[in-house]
Each structure stands twice: as structure tokens, then as C-alpha cells.
Image 1 (cartoon, rainbow, N blue to C red):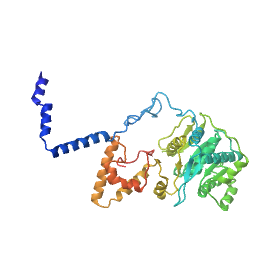
Image 2 (cartoon, helix red, strand yellow):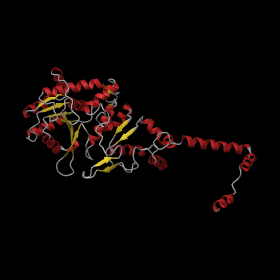
Image 3 (cartoon, rainbow, N blue to C red):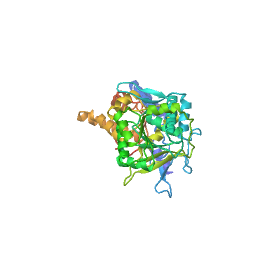
Image 4 (cartoon, one colour):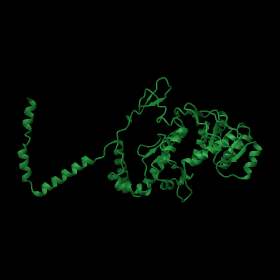
Length: 419
């Protein structure tokens, strides 16, 4: 009874009264009202819809009981671990074969010289070089077995992937080495993994490895394969140390003369051993079998390996920078990537560069306001590049940098929310 009295008290207009009111309005008011209604209807029908995430972003993983802090993704069936996604891609070797089948020998690995366009190696070219390199390593005494560990000490470049695939093709295990580990850790890894062969990019790194052998700190190292050219003095030092130094191309030529059929690994075979910088004491190792990836929080290589595997599995292309971080922006303009794996430090640098171009207090305020409004959209799950903020403030940046990114992926979390 009370609700009925309330409705009567509101004295809502009847439809006849509303029609009479509209007829009493002047034509200009009716046109304005109609335009407003049309704009409102257009906005409702075209307003951006939030992207539905695959899981609650505030609860993306859960701790596994009795596993010493290990966590498991909330996506998919959490009761069982996902061993593989595609039936025909259970190992890294099969991942590459699947990509080759999908792309039909399309472009795979890209690199460039300064002021030049990217040049590409096809999937079959990479496969051929990997088989020749692997055969050459076997002819030098390496064994096609998960007990054979091959060190790779180089920057990201096509030869890195070729060396990696050579190991996978003949069931050998890749052990990444990188400068950030420090010289003591590199010596420790070579001895701990009993590495007899290291593939490295530059003569300077080979010289450091030879010095370790000469001091008796890595007595098991017997062969160094160099991607770049090297001179006679390095060979002389190698001979004094009892270490064989050969170019990557020479080992491939040796493999051509002594070709061996591939010996692919099984799903349970080891594929990668990645050592990370230990927080205390010596480096810690993480093992990756073909069955699953297991990696530590600070192991950037495993994250990049997983991203690369996804690209390769679908026949994608991977472009590498020139080796100079100062030229990265130029490389991105030439490559126009859709997926951009990056460390937060680089994102911070890009963010600072954009805001440094606002040279007045008004411009800085407007840019900061637009960035915050854009950030609110992202927080609501609205991901787009055609908002009013994009068109007014960020379009020039997108056009200037020729950005075609669909995904920016980074491993660590040490970045500011604004970035």
C-alpha cells in the first residue's frame, strides 16, 4: 500500500501528456533533442568494451601445498599440469618442426646492418644450418645425448637460435652463459655442468675463456666455437692452452662432410640448464625438460625461451637488434614487431623520453592528464589505440615510432604503475 501511494505521489506524466509536451516544443528544440538522442545511442552502441581476462587479475596463481612456495597458474584445470599444448609439439625440436610445417618455409630469423633493412633466414635455411652445426659438433667428439652439455655465450642473434636448435636436433643440452652472471659464476657453471664445448659470439669472450683454462680454473673446456671472425693471436693462445678454436662456419662445413641424421630428444629428456645469479654464494641452476618449463623468478632467459617457443610453434618470425641498445629504436622502426619482449628498465627509458619532449609546464600537465585518463581505461580492461587521448596526444608518438605492437611482455615487476 505504501509503495502504491509513493508512485501516486510521484505524479509521473502520462504518455498523452508527454506527447502533448513534445508537440509544444519549437522545431529547433526537437532537432536538438533528436540529435542528443542519436549521439547517446551511438555512444552506447560503440563505447569500448572491457576485455574479459582469462582469470581474476588479482588472483592469477595459487600456492601449491607442500611445494616450498611454488605457485600454479589459475588458468585452465589447476588439478593437472599442462605438459604440452599441441599434440605434435611435445619437445622443442617438434616445436620448430611444427612452425616449419605451418609457415611452409617462410622467413624465420631476421637481422640487419646499420641503415639497412632486415634480411631473413627461412625456416629451412635455419634447419639446414642447425643440422650441419650439430653434425660438426658430433664429429668433434660431442655425443648425441642429454648428458652432453653445450655452453652458449653470446648476445641475442640468429646464431644463438641456430646453436640452440643444433643441440635440440641431436638431443644435447643447452647451457646459456651471459655476462651479467659475472666471471666467477661463468667458471663455476662450466665446471659444474662439465661443459667441454662453448659457442660464443666475440673473440673477447673467447679470450676470457682461454684465460680461465690457462689458469687451470676450467680444465674441462676443450673447444670454443666462434660466431664472429677472429685473428691469429687468439689461435696462438688457444694452442698454448690446448683448446681447439674454430669458427661457426668451419664447424658447419665439417658437419657437411660428416653429416649425421638427427637424433631428436624424447618428451622427458633434458633440454636446457639455466643458471641464475644466486642471491648468496654460487649460482643456482634450473632444469628444463622437454616435458615442462621450470624457471626461477630472476631467470630472464627462460621467459624469453618460452615466448620464442610460442612464436616458433606458430610459424612466426623473430627479429634481432643490431647489438647496440642505443640503436634499438631504429631497429623497431625497421622491424615493426607485433610482440615486444622487454625489460622494465627499457620501458622506463621510453616513458622518460616521451615526457621529456613536453618542454612547457602546460604541455607536461596535459600529457600527464592524458596519460592518467588512458591509464584509467587500461585499469578497466579497455585496451585500444583510438581513444580521444590517443588521437590528440599519443597518435604522433605511435606514427613516429611506427608501433604495431599487440603485446608487450616483460618478466620482472620492478616498474612504476604509470609506466
